[in-house]
Picture 1 (tube, helix red, strand yellow):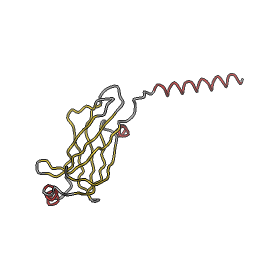
Picture 2: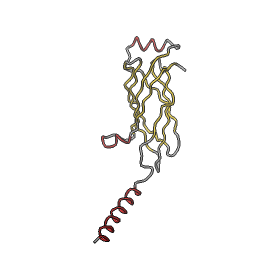
Picture 3: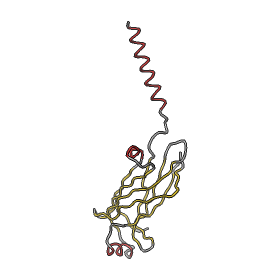
Picture 4: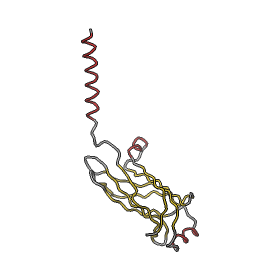
Length: 155
């Protein structure tokens, strides 16, 4: 009887371990980091240049659909923006550098002009970014998010 129970436990343990080993090593969400944030302007609109690094372990490139951002300046909302891509693939198994411009779309017109015309400005910024590879509730855990807090200025 002990041999039957031991065999059954061994069989369950072997099945469990083989099931765990069948989950591919590359099945993890991409890694995202913010390398740098600086104040910027584009077409007379104040905003932020954000340098990102993305790395993912997969068998093929992933299609990046969008970057969701929330940026605060001195604890006040400066930008709530969705930066979308038409056809952007992130290569696998290497660091991919990405630079995006996020407009300060939550600022008043006066605050926007102050940012545009004050190249010596240094301000405290906190930023939360999420990369969107897959839309839908079930895929949200795969979409990496990162935050940043610090002082920024024009380059």
